[in-house]
Image (cartoon, rainbow, N blue to C red; front, side, top):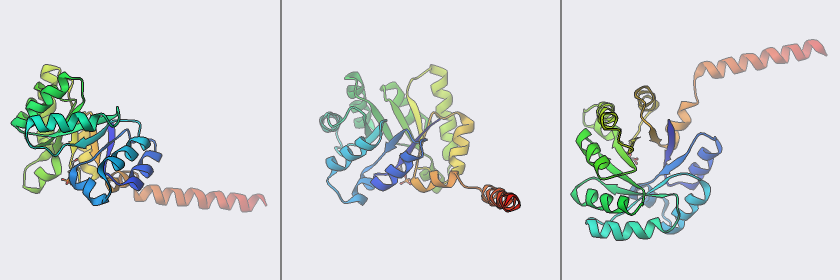
Length: 217
Ligand code: G3P
């Protein structure tokens, strides 16, 4: 499984990358706006920290505008993947950009059929927002399971990103299903490391080691 961090915060990205298990970054306009910095400068700094796919979202709403804006953003760094919102205009833009060899990540996917359309258009990634589905009483991970099955049936090369992750159980279920990519907020990734028995076990090992050191004195 590839793990991406879902943030535009430089400190979080630096820290997560230092762990050695994060391979990419996903951002969106909300995450970027929280940083209160010039867009291009922020994206370029992220690209200088992470040597992997960095998803950056377009804000144009028509296909022509998305393609134009997308080409400009993609020219900033070779690792940039354009995040394009699901919809007729978005899918038209993805088809054109993918034909030009520009990588895309179709965002705001909430159904298996939307994931199918992203793959048909040649998207590199398809982001399924599992947390937001759970929020309205639908099983987000069920949509991931259905989309994975469709992709397997037709050997699509588009990779599903399990996105809008809220807790480590989303990542566990993604792993059990064989989802190729999960993008998670910094805090959720951090929580994956933790288990109370790990802490207790380590305390005991260190205390026993201290006892031995005292005996050897
Ligand atoms: O990657 C998608 C993510 O940024 C959306 O997450 O928590 O706003 O639903 P959330």
